[in-house]
Amino acid sequence: MLRKIITISQEKCDGCGICVNACHEGAIGIKDKKAVLLREDYCDGLGDCLPACPKNAIKFEQREAEEYNEAAVKENLKNRASKSIKNSETYSHTKINSQLSQWPVQIKLAPVKAPYFDGCKLLIAADCTAFAYGNFHNDFISGHITLIGCPKLDMVDYSEKLSEIIKQNDIQTITIVKMNVPCCNGIENAVKKAIANSKTTVPVNVFVVTTDGKLATH
Image 1: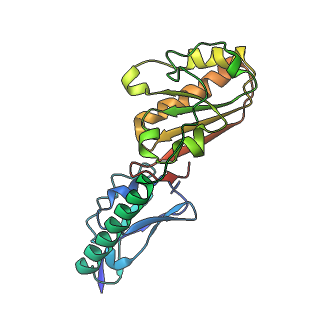
Image 2: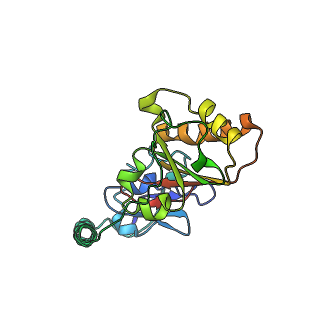
């Protein structure tokens, strides 16, 4: 049938995953680091995902497409919820040991010079990431010295302190983990500004956690 349905520009899409959470029908997913329409009959054509896209990669088009199938959507969402509960139950019986190797972890409280910084792989993470991503200790804290902060709540520019930490210590790499929300960009911006101010070259890797606890591409 001829109807209004979304189309996603693969050139504009950066795979952030925000549209996946915005779509209440489960019609959008991430494949090969790009957002894609999983099934035509899951898309109701209302476009809740359009304003959520920061890259303006989603728009409407009028074309031949499968009719919206509300029953299939409900069944899909039911199956997803059931799977989520099972995963949660499995995870709750799995003991995760702390991988934290130093204290304090708050950027505001951390010293600018400390023995554990020398030669370390530094993890700089937004506060919420450890709560959103279940295996945070094993996947990110392990093997790293950890610093956390929230630029929105702290209302402070971390770059000055981070710059001193980078200048006064032999930092090998920096891993940034942030949420896929606008305020978290402050963490990444502070690190990049700190590296520039320190006049030092440090390899940086950035990971983005979605609000439903998944890793998105950066």
